[in-house]
Length: 288
Image (cartoon, rainbow, N blue to C red; front, side, top):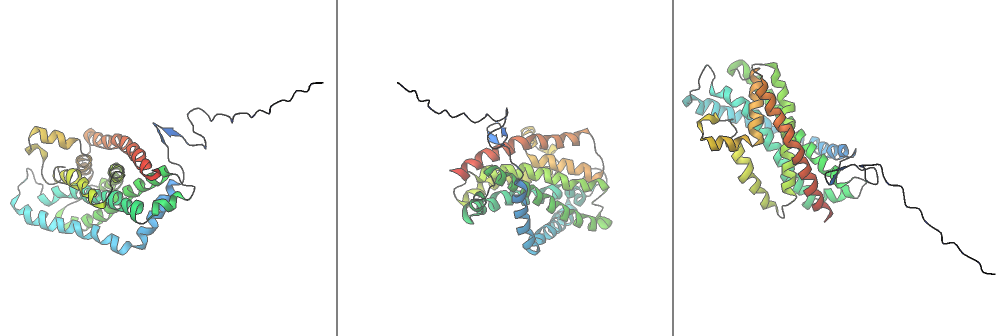
């Protein structure tokens, strides 16, 4: 009598819900959305910062004073502006954006490069359940936080100088701190994307020479851009620092209009593609 044997069948695992990868990871245009461990990466960077706080807090307090004395009081004696504005007052909003910019860029370039290539920090974090996207998002958030911290310290200096030089005209100046966070998020994301392509630390200087320094000089922080040729003004409009300086100018003076909200909207809109680029490029570097 012939017998038949049945071949055991295995059922395919159920498909994840629409729009969601296995493991509960949400995709976003080809990259995974960072999860809750992003905060732990940010927290790790914060703890290191507070261990070195004495060295980290000195530059944001000293550098703006040097800028105000050298340019505001020195060069400013040879500069005449329309109206009753003194040159040192004109510098204030720019200083509130420029030095936080440097903090965010340094963190996303040199800080990230050392954590990735020299200190083995990224490799150590990857041995935990944290995903590459969470490392990248945590570092981008920390770069933005560094910008906000520097803006807060510079604001303290400006408040101290206000009784003599009238640098702050409105309590809305407090909002320059979250504005610096937004600027830092944009520049931190762009910096991480660039760092992912750097094969040596010397290559990071190109980001400064070709991107950061032109922004520094042509952001409207030192002089009105109306004096430049039209093409130069148009190019400057596409740089994040210009929009941060103009936003700060309205917040410091209290003269806020729709144009300033437009500058904020520009920064927020640029953040999303910049952050996506950081996730996409840096993840490829970390898993190669």
